[in-house]
Length: 210
Length: 244
Image (cartoon, rainbow over all chains, first blue to last red; front, side, top):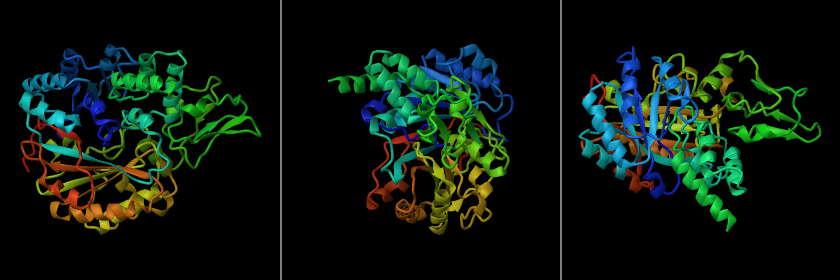
């Protein structure tokens, strides 16, 4: 799926939002991937990846890291999120040095991602460019809700639940971090950026209370 | 199908907040919740999140191929049987450095129907597939993309009649064209976007130069399409590396 590509919200907010992926190719390098997946996870953890997971188990916001690692199979998909460009650079340097032969994808705002590639010494091969949303947009949720729901590329986050979480923060029943973690748990892949989400919820709840 | 057992449902309405496509309704006469079977995409979010305190929501066996297709595509935990890929079942740019699916001089077109969050009836996916096929794009075969399994003729993009009223959380119409044909494919999409009852998110997959630039996108300005600022960058570390 085009998954992490079509996130929305103010560009400045998206500049602190990078997804990382390890991919195996069917019939080429998709057997016994676990040792390589563990190398990716180690590199991501070393630079402080805020969230990561495996679609077959779930995100680290919901499951113990060791459980996710134990359950890795050849059908797993390992991916996660960074909130700083420096993390992307360090991660790519490590992965390049490990020379694991798996496909690596970084998604984000291109004015941030492409310089990070250059700094880490990797050369872009192909890019999937987002041309945004087309068609009948009248029934889409509001922009704030979309900026949160689109952080799960498979759209597992119900718009009404986002509004419920914002409401809970507004009423003081949850902190923005608690609400963001609850939302992150819907995204099995682990690419939901709960740090960015907490910021969006905080700003929205504050605005609504003014 | 996913259903709500009326004997167990107390009508609390908690489940409504958990539906990705707003398909759970409260029926005031009965004071119970019910799932609109025409809109439910079988994404199983309500089941996985165990949202019903009374355990009233349960799945019923998916007893035909189209229902199974609907569920497998709408629920990313599932792995698609033919492509062997989980999520929405396609690899698009993710492994292009190894697969070489989109080579220099070509543009991959990934039309993520129903996204963000609106869902898509396959009749609308068919309209879009037929529009890009008529504009000269080559639709991807079923070894690469799940929707092609419902497409007897890749030349036209027409889908099997029996599947058209199924509602999915999203599904990708995947194709590719020559760089010189990109303009007419985009023009076809500009026309068909007015004829569908949902949305799609559009991605263009391009073999870039070493700086990540793509001259093929120069036609966007002429068509009034904003230049993209987001991208999914395959950084070329896969092996064996496709140099095409």
